[in-house]
Length: 206
Image (cartoon, rainbow, N blue to C red; front, side, top):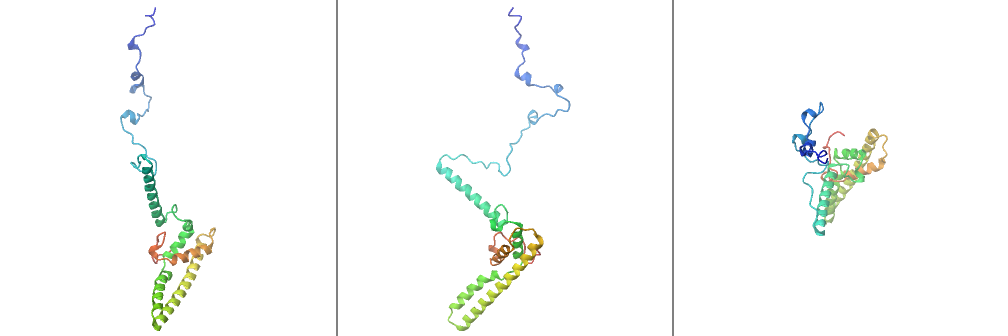
């Protein structure tokens, strides 16, 4: 009796035979996968992550601190570059918004008296120490002219900022007075030292 229920070893399908699918058994329109074709699929990399950028796990606390400082240094350098380039993600709160970007363009497209103010102030300071009445008088006159020039230029900047902001952003929530002060202060800074960097050339229409 036991022999009746005994199956031949050849009648039992092996796992390889079960998994094997002949082309005839595939449904119509079947597309073989890359794995079946023997094509290697590259490993996916998440956006913003560079291949090979993974670092080994620190072996001790000293190595961990070193890696943390290196990562902070890279992040600070990236933030500084982004701030200079005018990237909104890295700008300070005082520099964010399209209104302030417009104010920066207004200032950067023109020459301002404020850029000459500090250089002139240095000349006035040196001239005032010279014990020659004519030099001291010239220094005082230069100081007066610089002060008047800055005042007049600040008034012109404020008027232009107010006009263009009202024209292009009539529903802005920004205070016009704050934008005017922002423009005047930028006008007092040397062009090469301005942050974010100017994105318009001198004389360019805004």
